Image (tube, rainbow, N blue to C red; front, side):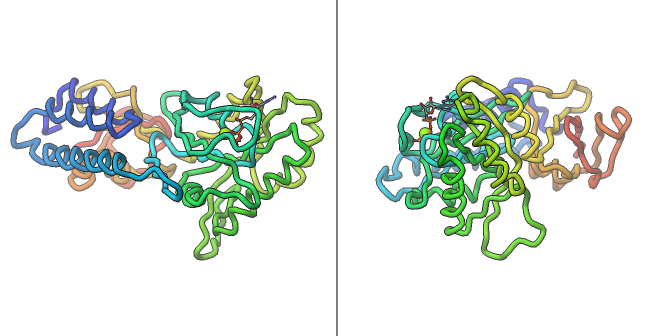
Length: 329
Ligand SMILES: Nc1nc2c(ncn2[C@@H]2O[C@H](COP(=O)(O)OP(=O)(O)OP(=O)(O)O)[C@@H](O)[C@H]2O)c(=O)[nH]1
Ligand SMILES: [Mg+2]
């Protein structure tokens, strides 16, 4: 790379990609700026870092000033391979599932309406991470004002149904209906002919509390009511049954691939993959890594699926999961 980035710089950049909060992001960006060799070839990158630093600072300032009162909106910046919003009726185990999969600090309690605010956590999946957002419950007459737009913005949703409660399936139907009133349509797969002004959100249905008595009979009803509409996963967020299968299914359902970068003459960076939509080309990937790469891309070499090691490919070559890409500008 023309800018001759040092390993220390690349390390700071990897940390930046993993940062969870704007404060952390700011610290990483400052380190990256300090570690960036300052010469002509890196001028663009210097300017880019400076503008990212001021954007993050402005974001921190906005967060600080945001009034924490009724009717406020929550903006949770997306992180990792994709963002899942966890939704459902009261007491179905949304918070329990999020704490099982992540270190999110969200309250679990044996009574309804425990969660009042959305909380984000990161779930590991192999060498990448998926963002989970715990949310307050939804019922036919209770929907936090900000929630439908958060659902619309998420990459996918988990709709949770409690299998310890005869009303479970009806509570889930109430969630679906209430969101539909806000033109938010939960679907198992995006429709081929979407209706205008509707927001379709890919959704996995999770039958939780399979460890409880009578769960299997209720599961039959859930399958009958929702089996055609959503993929169904059955778990116990309390005992862990089915949770690892769900973790895998959540990554697969995002329909993204992992791509690793490599600098010429160096081993690939296998620590922190980029993720991009399945079907992305080399050029689309380059744009994700850095605007400069997309604008000035001359050639690329690939190690991975359907190519021989180090094969030169064109910019419209379609990438596969776990490909390693060396971009030349
Ligand atoms: N037996 C059993 N109990 C569970 C399971 N998952 C959650 N629970 C219990 O169900 C209760 C509700 O769990 P929460 O995670 O607080 O439910 P929630 O959906 O976040 O509830 P709200 O925030 O009120 O909407 C708690 O007592 C959990 O310990 C499960 O798989 N099996
Ligand atoms: Mg909760």
